Length: 518
Image 1: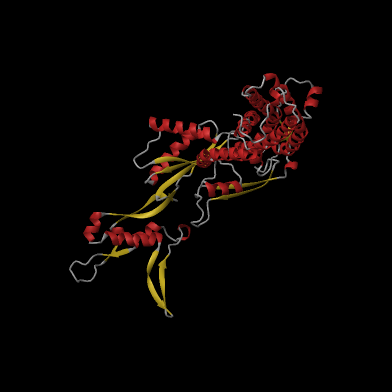
Image 2 (image 1 turned 90 degrees about the vertical axis):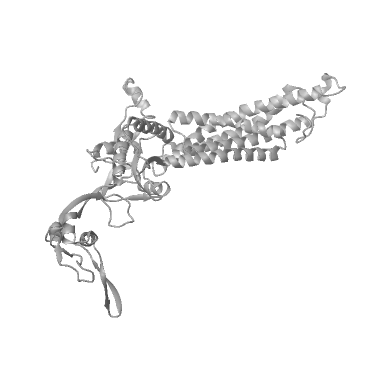
């Protein structure tokens, strides 16, 4: 990694500390990469859309806007680093330290998608996890899939012979207790020292500092046989070498238990720009097909669960099902209080989807899937469209009612003229609003620092929504408002009893807020 010009330092850690507070397995290696300031990154050649056909003078001009030599982006650097450190038997999951800790606190996994395997048997966790990792690693959009295996440690034990135990009259529980005391340690008893009772514990020496192998020590240890007659003293000491033979077994190095169940995880890292929702849907279909075909066998009591940011996405979707209708009703209520007319409130509210057209096209062109930051940008566009729509209606109403008081509303053309006057008054403030907001949001699309990935997805729908919001405010809303006012005028003219149509302009128009017209 240090061969890359973008990398300043590399720090690696293998295994974990000898403490129960570190959930990392012994086989995990963590590598922290510190990057240089972006101004010091070397330029790399990128093939642009004009690179193959444009002549040299034209390429020089186009290179001012789309340069062919630029520093790598974070996603490009991660891809190159992943290719450089890829080794047989090793898989990598790339994330930032702050994001990893945040994901661990919120979802329990460090990667965007995690697969939780539940089984009452540790051996089955390894079997299912290995098969599941193989299925998920071949899916499109998977950068890496890592199975957090339970690991295997060699533990000494003693295989007692039942016939030998019966022949020497030795209790099997006594043999098991002595072997456990020598292999794992334990309490021998208590002593009294200076008025205090102290516990006496036996702690085995590590295997690398023992003068002899543990198997040889176990053979020489003795246990007493049971008394042959009631109330008789204990029998003679019997060496363990006569009762069986030492052996070694492989046991899990670490066990993870959640909600009272043994579990293990498969951590799935996704490539840049992959939609988590669509990826999990595809992965679920592939896993279900593997279960149906027998590649993954699930016994009773075993199951596969999907977690990570996917679970947060589902929880957010459930909340949005309640929040969106409540927000819509609140917006309608505020508009009714503002205009004192349900029709005007519905006109402003119904025109808001036009403002989202630019946001949707921007997300499509940039390839941004729907996510929490994108929803924040979309909701901001809705608020901006509501705000500018209300201001536009206030300007239009001011021009309309002024002409009404002056008796200058005789036909639909007069209504159009009044609405055009109000729209023109709002043109300059609207252009200034779009210009200032676009100037503040555009730099976020090229930002490439901590948190830039989130900010780009917030700013992109807002920039696209600014354009269509301006079109909504200056074109769509005045047209809808004119159609509504013309319909009111026509109904007022038709309902005038005894007044000829030619003198319909003399019909008293109701003041603002009146509900004489439907």
